[in-house]
Length: 319
Ligand code: UDP
Ligand code: MG
Image (cartoon, rainbow, N blue to C red):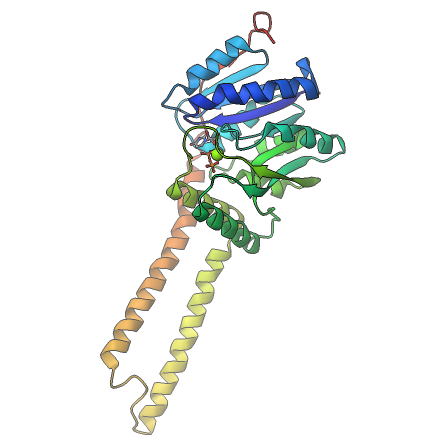
């Protein structure tokens, strides 16, 4: 059997060599010389990441370096790597050594037991801010409530996938990808293994707050239409409240009384107008999130473009 390890990297020049130094001996021990390939995807880095990857191709066997035409983002870079991987099983992992390669042995054991997906569940996360920990915790719990697809909580993209899962992914051409959700949607037999997430070895996170928010919205809009329904529920609710209030006003008028809010009419009118204006804009915004994604899909552009692919020269490379 062939095992592919896919690693998308964006400005990780200092992490390429340490990653391979830890990963390759492990692969040789667990699957043997002929049994693996490591697919490094350079996601349009502006530092020396590509040079580090090319040095690795010269030095080691069984390395594939895929250079994308520009920065497409983590999810698309991962997709490129997964689609190029030839293994019977494909492992996706981060290039900053936050995902310990040592977990591969457990992944493989589960895979051999017949599981199609083995995903890593973060028991603890080292070196992350309280803010990131809190928002991540919240996010996974919110999306769990919003969708029928059972997306495991506290799980990233670090996972092993069997060939049939990879083929199913290849047939899913969606653009705003939330891979961990897509893999859950595919089904078959899936299981989680716990691990402690390490600190990033070198460099800084490539997911600043704004990008994280976009990713969260991608996840929610790809797997749930609850936000849309929420808008209609809220519309019904405010209409009902308005009708009740209208009846109250008419009632008071019939008995020649002042309705509630009458003496402070200006304030209550302004508050109602501003509130409803805000609610309508939020509603339009939610609609817009979905329509923007429809627009992106309809254009049908390729998900990513490849500039070059380098493979280790099997004869020259030393193991
Ligand atoms: N990454 C990428 N393209 C991007 C952003 C990130 O290929 O546009 C890679 C990055 O190099 C790393 C992985 O995706 O290997 C996870 O990113 P990061 O470690 O920055 O995310 P975090 O662990 O902080 O959530
Ligand atoms: Mg990281």
